[in-house]
Length: 319
Image 1 (cartoon, rainbow, N blue to C red):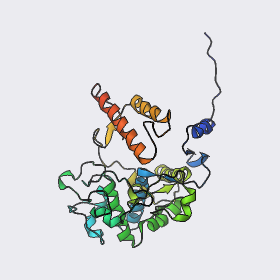
Image 2 (cartoon, rainbow, N blue to C red):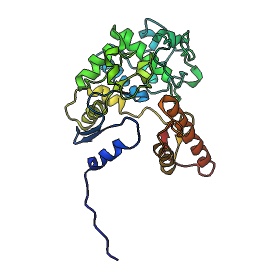
Image 3 (tube, rainbow, N blue to C red):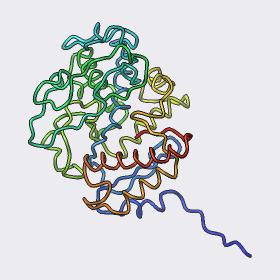
Image 4 (cartoon, one colour):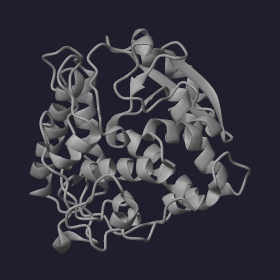
């Protein structure tokens, strides 16, 4: 039996097929040699909502602020907050908040549809109307335990605002986005009207809690962020202060296999993804918009729960 040889193609050879599958907007960036090598899909400047991928960028904003001496990773956050105080926050530090070990609640923030009343950040933190989420507070009994918390990153946002003396979006622009070259990205909430024509899809939300879920960005800009972190890790020149990047890349503690994280073996993850990619209509398991994402997460969680009843081991991945 003779084996047939197949030509080896570079990764970007299949990008065009990938980004044209289905009916949704799709953009891809490829990093090679520490630089953005290839982009494909949507035209440059088309904005996507980053969702929870906003958190690492927001964390870098706080770490840059700390590297400049304007915030302290290990001081009590209530000593740095001036516009609001975290209930139950005695002994809670910025390091706790960034690593999801502060014991704060409000795991996920749903956002607000265009035209719907949206709260200010302070109203969201307090759980006051028109906020639709509970007040953010710390449970001392859960301190030092991993507990995924979008509410905790809302606290980070307020802390950066208070310590920098300017809106979070402006601080993020000056500390991280502009130095890295993320010129098509913004934490502005709501999205300025002049950028509405640049969004990838119409079913977007407003997130007053921008640090948790409100970054607008492009695949190329996110890739630039990763490249800046990689440069610090490799000891190469970077647009970031590598002391802060080093903190981000340092293990903060063990992750549980349950809760907001799931033990999903690779085969289960691939099955969930296939269910989403095979049907991109509103009736598919993924549906459309944020509600579709939640449905896909629920589906993957149920599959994972059934699988764990037969097998207890597997790599931990984010749900």
